[in-house]
Image (cartoon, rainbow, N blue to C red; front, side, top):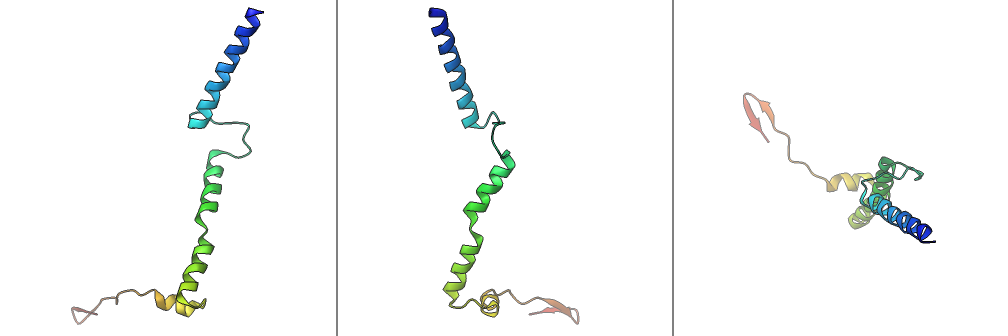
Length: 88
């Protein structure tokens, strides 16, 4: 009976150690339906919400048209050489 209890305790200790290794990322779970890269991509896709952020920015501008959005983004004038000098 003692031998069986020792065996159960040993298996529980191994199971706990494996759980810790999986949680820390030191060991890969081969039973997982997706790999580590896919899990990172899924996480990035759900946390970014780019479309929602874009809609919120458009709402702040007061219109959803492209011309208003493009007008909100301004770039400094491009300097071009003309007669050996740069002009704004």
